[in-house]
Amino acid sequence: MEKILVKTGIYSFIGSFFLLIIFMKREQNTIDVDGMTTFTVTPYPEFFFNILRYSVISAVIAVVLVCGYLLTNKKSSE
Image (cartoon, rainbow, N blue to C red; front, side, top):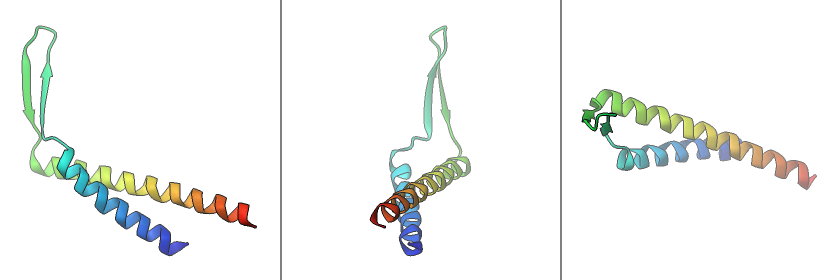
């Protein structure tokens, strides 16, 4: 069981890290009430910290879900 949880955590962290690098944008356009557009760019250290944070969160969620799945299947097979 531990082996499955560790692999789930590692693979979900790496997978979400690469997906977030591909799909997360550094640039943001916001339109004010007056119709003015503001363009902001997130600095690279903050950008990679956000990607790292979201990857850790998704890995923890994946491990909790798999742990719950394994525990429910273990109880039902007894």
